[in-house]
Image (cartoon, rainbow, N blue to C red; front, side, top):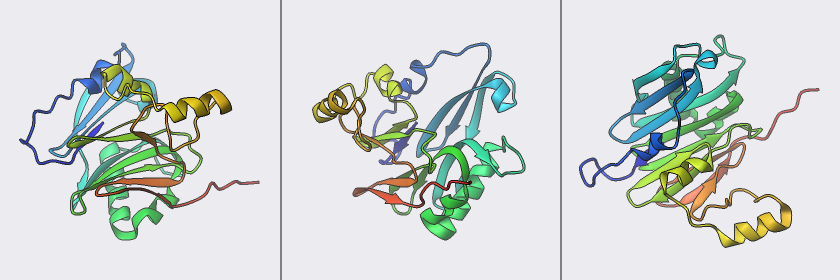
Length: 212
């Protein structure tokens, strides 16, 4: 997906990269959420989404100056596949009232993207266990994000490698987050919120909870 940090009309918006790297199958459900400030594209197996295959155009949920999407698997909710618009609106309302601590009540494997229009910053949240990955990078006039680094590579963006990350991978056989193999791209830490605006910082909201 992409969050635009500059007003609409200041530059051309090429969003072809959002779908160019994904292949539609007869069983794919594609969701496209759009507003003047952000675009989010998600692909899911139609059976898991409990819907018919095809493409669906939706508005980005908005509550006041906050807009965004929460996606993934959520537990301890009446409907295991809740309506994405109303469910995201409830998360936006909770964040507006309680800040990052509101994410503690979300049980599951999920990620969330929020654009704070008043503060002019983008927020990227990830579940405590880290079951859902999330990456973000700040470019000229926009912030791009994805749940898979290959989406950036397929689009032709962010192909430069982080040399220190490559050295870490050769030594440890993995790259310690929040660094990634892609230069300029940050991995959101589990149980944290990555805030990108005038400055970039990680804020911890919870630790994993283990049940005996």
